[in-house]
Length: 278
Image 1 (spheres, rainbow, N blue to C red):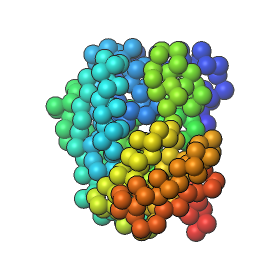
Image 2 (image 1 turned 45 degrees about the horizontal axis):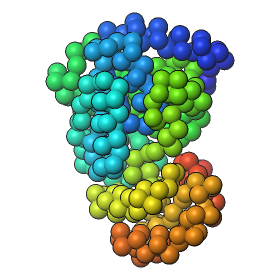
Image 3 (image 1 turned 135 degrees about the vertical axis):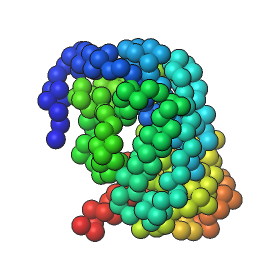
Image 4 (image 1 turned 90 degrees about the horizontal axis):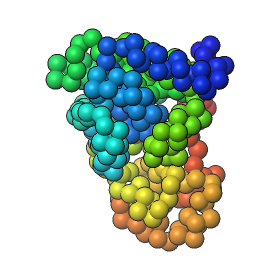
């Protein structure tokens, strides 16, 4: 259900967000470097200054390129940044990759933050993450983990959706304003297929090919020995032109077969499997 604030004007939502953040003793921001968490971190620094800190979970599910970008963004915003190693692959529920995988991932992050709290921030600082109203209708078990740990979602509370976050980002010169959505590498693996470090490394190598070739929105969906490549619909013609190069280089990353999805990129496309099973 959408919060009542979702019907407010952009200016009213922004005023709500700023007021709520300013009232916090401090903020520990779960920071991935994506559009939403970057906007939230910027707003926290604007409202709280040095009483805010960014925390990025570092594990095999995070590509090295995304970690480097998160580090650079935190510097640009002027936020203290803590890179926190997490060990979700040690959790059987995560490796099993059932429909609740994201719960185990977020739970690992929030448990690790609690364990390391003394070295991160004072105990009374709120832990917050960048959920937005657009997330409320999707399959997002990580939201349950956040609720279990009392983690706040200031953007949701302010009624802010993706359009609001992108507008805020543009107004404040954040280079993530037009960044395409990105999820952890494990989201490329169909539910029910076990996850391990080797699988994640193979996906990362394959997606590095697309990144190096200049594609902006992409996923390599892992189907055992087959890589199903999704790119933005507007980038499909170029992908077809480069199909030989894509095929050869993604095969070299560790796949036996490479398929280009004719429908293009679809957010959460593997969630369709859950809907068909229910």
